[in-house]
Image (cartoon, rainbow, N blue to C red; front, side):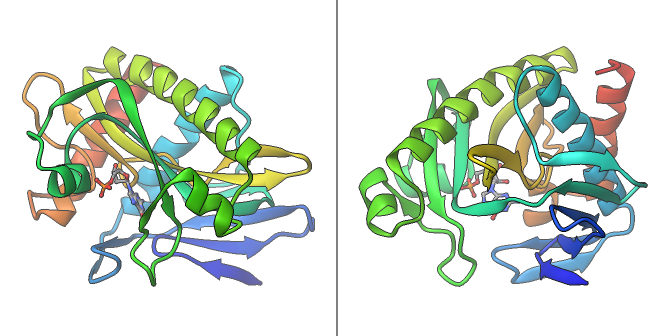
Length: 233
Ligand code: 5GP
């Protein structure tokens, strides 16, 4: 039974009521679904990269929803209640940050910038601050500090990981879920949700290839996967 159909993943009920089955599809969307294409191989690449990264994070003390990899495009995951706030971490300026604040593309942030957005396609994922999140009952103050703490730790782990494969982690988006009495990392971490630039050439290896029609998306994602596999992470 289908529980939820997202832009690039489908969530299915599994036999166990506490778990879900997730299918990574070949759908690519941008600009809130305005641009939409089927790109064969995208689901497999995102699943492989995300599974690898979630395993790496688990090994380093971050609890994720991932339970079992079933095949190239399916996993089972803990059934969590997704928090209605997306967490964005930025190590450098690009995308909506450049558009909004007029700073130079690629300007480094140290410490990184942390943003919260409402998870709502209808509203276009608007930026929200802590008091707005509490007023909207999207998360509690404690949940916000916990998401912030985990997001910054995940950023450290991911920067280290991508540095090993000569990729610059520019920014990324995280989603958390309530599971039992704690917050766990959900959704995915892949080139769909991160900006990844080749350290040497600056080539974009992420979804901006699709958003900005920069070239074949799959070859960028395959390059990310190949480097992570070669480094035996
Ligand atoms: P920006 O705010 O610059 O558009 O995005 C910042 C980062 O968060 C980028 O890495 C982008 O891919 C990711 N991101 C922001 N919103 C979404 C979203 O709705 N879905 C996905 N997959 N990634 C997002």
